[in-house]
Image (cartoon, rainbow, N blue to C red):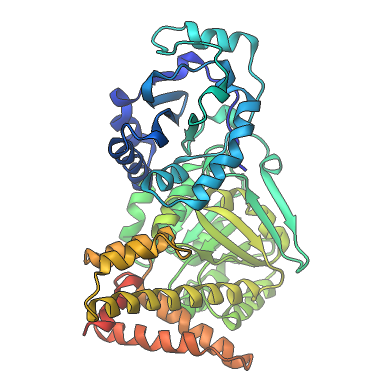
Length: 485
């Protein structure tokens, strides 16, 4: 559900273009910049067209509301900020974003954030039209006179501390027939900026593609974090951002109440716990250990047993997403194991992700994660196969992509990965070697369950070919190169 604020104070209105670069640089990441660019580009191209005849958009930064553009001097009145007007527009806007894939729609969907409806204060609307520099002409013309009027509020992720509220107020808890539970922020990125961080001391082991973004968001949202990484230099940036440095995994686990780890594979996960100066040496009764690496269920079972044998509490919490989603705090967290640890991690999961699911006993999250990555890896291989077959048969790859992105399989994943392939950009967002590892583990899981996985097996062979072509440390989209050599 999309929520819009019911009133806006005039002192929050400031010229957009005069402040745009400064505010984006201070408050937003690359994803936000790309979304703003997409919206602006669409508006330029669509100027004069009916669908944007009346359009205005705002960007909400801390304490300020930035006016982006008003088309054709459409007069705005108090009715445009009323709860009833916003409610009437929600369904129409949601349907538009679901059914279209223009850069404008994608940009708006990236930018739109959840804000809480509130009744307008009697004096607010008066101030809105009377304050200096408001730039608004207040009239009482009914909304229905302009059926093309769209009012979008785009909020940013860092809200002032005054908007903080108890976590329980901002979460939806959904019990499913399967027994799994989803703890879900109504809008994660908006929520991320106003969470109340846990007072527990947090440790984090592993600062790779995923871990770096996670730690950055934990720090940004006010958590006390101690970090460790096998390559110690990677810790420097986070120390500058306020993190503390742990000398060994054992020291981090000993110093912290909850220790997270996110490493590359089952061997690395085991070594981190069981190796010299490993986590196990720092575990004491009551200490929590959260394994975020994507590994096999057997590894999770082993780690759970050794941690709990020392009186520790164990949770697995692998994440679905990419480096960009990690940086944006938009991961999906799949958790299983000790339910009380899951609840203790609420503010951490809100900082790093948009949704978290509790899936029951330890091992279930590993199983679900492997299935998800098996599907993603197989899909990426199929897309690459389609692109290369198009080229081999004399068809335009760009046209293939354009057609694909107008159909039922349209998604930002398809568009971004294919565009990167056509541009020869294989900078890793998720390592190819890791998706191949996940395919291998999923196939093995299928073997143990006596369940066929022929599609995954075929995709696995293609990724193995790509690895043989030195694509291991490139993005998963580099599987494309397996088809052209």
